Image 1: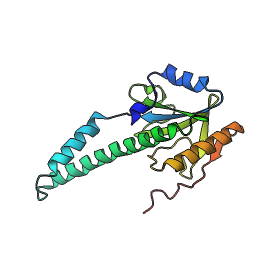
Image 2: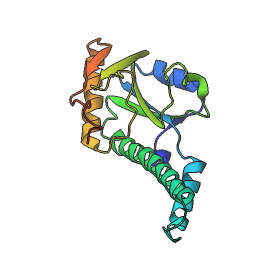
Image 3: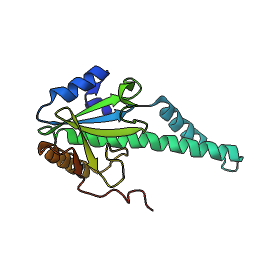
Length: 180
C-alpha cells in the first residue's frame, strides 16, 4: 500500500516538505517500503513448512527466525495500509509522506530511527512530540491497525500544535500495549 502515498527521496526533500506546510500537520513514516530479506524469509518459511517438524534444533531455530521476518513485513504493511486509508480523510489538516531510511539516512541518528516503522509529526517546521504513555514521546514506533485510533491521534496532535504546544497527550494510553 505504500505506493499510494508520496515518497521523499532526499534529506532536502524531507526538509522542504516540513518547511512548506504552513497550515497542515506533516506526518512522516520513516522505514522501508519493502525489504528483500523479509520477502525471502516469507518464501523460505512457507516452503519449509512442508518439511517434517521432527528435524533438529537448528531447523526449529530457523523457523523462529523466519517467523520473526514475516511479522516484520506484516507490521510494515499494516502501518502503510492504515496510513494510505486515512490519507484521504485527513487531507484537510494533515499530509502523509514516506521516507526510506536506507535511501535517506540523514535523519537516522538525529531521530534515532532504528525501528522498522517510525511515525513522526511536524507542524510549522517544529517537531511535535506526543505522550503515548510509553516513555518515548518523540515518535510512534509500532504498527497501528485501527484506522480511527490513528485518525484520533493525528487530530489530537494537530489541535495541540495549532495551540502552540510542543507536547500533546494522546487520547489513549499505550503503556499497557505490550502486556499479556
